[in-house]
Image (cartoon, rainbow, N blue to C red; front, side, top):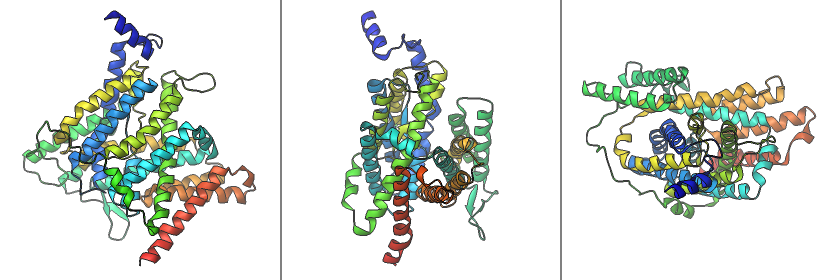
Length: 459
């Protein structure tokens, strides 16, 4: 037994990195609990665009993709980061690609798969780093912040706190609805726990709101936002109905939809590029796995698994699967190796049996998670150079357009136009990279086709 444990120790470099098996497993458990909100939030977001698929299928797809990706990360890269369908990119698939551009959900999965394949090719070819350097840092930060605003608005709307206004785009919801008040309580509890430094703030807010909601329902308070548990079994068999559905989505490509299809792929790839690369760098730094030049030990393999996971998620039936920054909670407890994602993967596997419980979580239960995640993503604005007029305009238009039009693609387009236009007008045309020119050209084709040419064609 000692020989086997020594081999495992050497394989994962547990002792070499100053850790122990118990510490690694504890780190994996803490990481899973910190990111397990995705099991409730991701299916609820995707179901907005896929009402024809039951929650159980979307839940199974989410847990399955996370399980496979975590196990691959643990065994291949041995890097201490867990993966699951990403926040932000799931909203992009549901609200921009499906509800905004008009693609059915299975066709949206096809877009996720192709984007993942492109992202994988970019990663293994070494172009990933070149593309990262080709887009201004301020624009990357603004895109992340814009996604934060975007998912916060979605969370507030789905929880009833925001609604369509009579004379305005949005207004406060019906505050006499007990479900809306429960949503507000969820936000207060989640943010309160986070302010107190509790690592379980997100999952704690979800579970506390769920429990309170069940009690309110038991006392006869009625609202679509108040969770109820009538016939759902605590333990259920996984529903793999969405597995492989992605391949049915490739039979649709018609003339009018080719440009939106390609635009969605490029936009999703760009968003994934910024998000995952930054996450891996941050996690590697937190784990002390970077050298003096900022290179991450095991970073190339970690990026390869991260890129491949995008395709894995699509095959499972969910949105882009990516690295989670919540992994730093496990790293903070001492974890430093691939045992962290392996442990998280095992727990995601176990969660496959509990879709019945998670299906009772309403928008009121998950709004706190979405507001907190949005808050954390919005923090990036502090690193934007607001004193530079071009940077200021680019960042502002990116964030505002993304949030108010409920479209990440629109926000990226607005930012690209503002950045290139501002740099050209201020005599910095030579500073515009080829990557940024290409992104601007794609954005122009997207705006012209999806918002002008195609609507006229279809009218």
